[in-house]
Image (cartoon, rainbow, N blue to C red; front, side, top):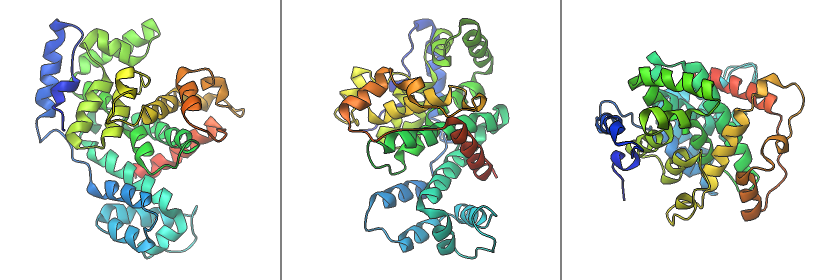
Length: 307
């Protein structure tokens, strides 16, 4: 059963109800809420089907001319081949289905939200989200096979911030200043200034964009993934995806670009409740990440996605 945007936008202070009312009006305006391209969702479904052929992928990609052109562009780059790529079949063979899936999800997501570009530090915002997407996928894959939902959840986790920066610019500046002064995260200051935070707005936006419920809930709870109301929800995934996004976000915020040495994730997350939750519920493989390398790969991805 679909929820109304207002159902996600409860405020902690009655005097801030105007914020929720304005957000509800914005999110109910079809000219404001972006649609999510069907081709990206179809690619995720294909990856989950073991009987999917290369032909199946080709047919879906060719439904989106912009995506097809982007795949050809990437496959024809020096990093993948020294010759001209003339068909999607060639591109798929060279760059692989997983890379095509990442390109499709990122291009679809960035494109869908491009209306917010004018007032946002676009590159910085998406670099963080692409890095979180990569890390979410890396964390999730040591516990179970990944199918694209994990990467998309990382890409979408902070979309609520776009709404705040775009439609509440004065309050957004107050959030930035307050978070720096109090050394707290943005969500804490958002609740103080707006009465709600970007995770609630992100969940409401995901609802309107008809994004999968597990992704919606990971966006909603990535700062509180072990919330019993989330983990015990029979329609949810037991908290798995939100925990992976939360860990990916924590790793991304650990400032990997400033560290030259190999970074063991245990230094950052080993004793966190979220990591212990995953260890207790699932049987993991070993996770080792060089966060500096992941950041460089995210920067390379971003050049493709924003080209």
